[in-house]
Length: 484
Image 1 (cartoon, rainbow, N blue to C red):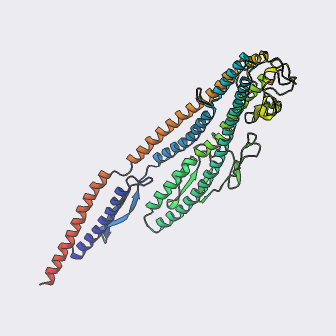
Image 2 (cartoon, helix red, strand yellow):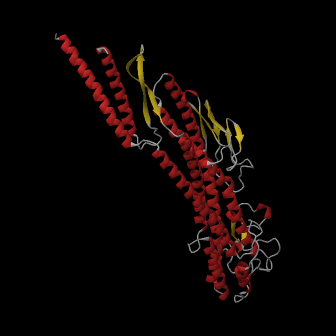
């Protein structure tokens, strides 16, 4: 082997060792970086005219496990959806209030019942009559607050959908741009690993919003599809459309057109959280809250409000009433119209006839809503009838409650149903979180092993020293020859 060949081989070895050291250094420094794929330099023998001519750098390989990556993304999407559901149900449970908590629905009914009993023991006491009226008003206001919370949660979900759609569109545009840059880099034989890392992080963010499948395309590009069949990106990014609202009332629904669905490139798609093209992930969870879970809870709250109105609008309870007259509880001051039950929990209030602040008199709680003047101050018949009506067991006319209950029993069923859903959602969230953390840990284990990288660095240092020694020896030989 000639001196020039030895020098060429050593110089190529130094170049390869330097590039390998850079890659190992990058691996170690990014061992904990999210989305980073371990790199490895690809080397091969450089042969010229049948003779070895050093080492050639073929490129840098970025390692990743597409199966594990897809599983982790799917698990993160499921976690995002279950987290939305769990948080919503927790908020509704808090709005209804747990037994024993001040202001809870069951506590309001208990206070009203106790106030009626106290008033019946001293029907001549204006203070006790006033306390019973205030307790009734507090019960109606608690139902108002529950309804307001449900609609506030729907509005919050609608606004979160809008933010998520904006985030999704921005991310899809970023992936499209990164695809083009990666293809350009690979076409010019440049290392595109850092761009691929960046693209993976962007796609991870998309996968939390919408479950997806990543399909490789030529020149390092990728296409993105949802399991439901929607094309998010294949060459060009899809445009997702959504129109948020500024306020939501119980009658506003997707079916009526008052609330927006989603469009893909201008074409409406189903937003069914279980079977739609974008089913799964945070977006599906938000649509499930806005269009399914919240309306169901609103319907149950309305059923509790209707039950209260029906109990005290019966002329058999208050003989001063005639059929069709509003009772102690009203629909915004009027008698209940069954066809207008939707949103009743937000409108229920006490009859102005017993409210001194509205020009009424609390004595009508004792003498009858239809009484023209105060009657016998010692007559507790009506107060006892009101108390009996509150505790009587009856089957609610709506809300899916099929078992006869007292007013407090019905409110307990209402709370129990929400609490069971909240517990189920929390359990699902816990399962999804554990699964996600397990897959994340498995992905990290398949990533950069710092011990292995340090061992490689030692080998690289020895190779660098060996090639440097060859160059030094060649230099000494040349200097010797020149000195002859």
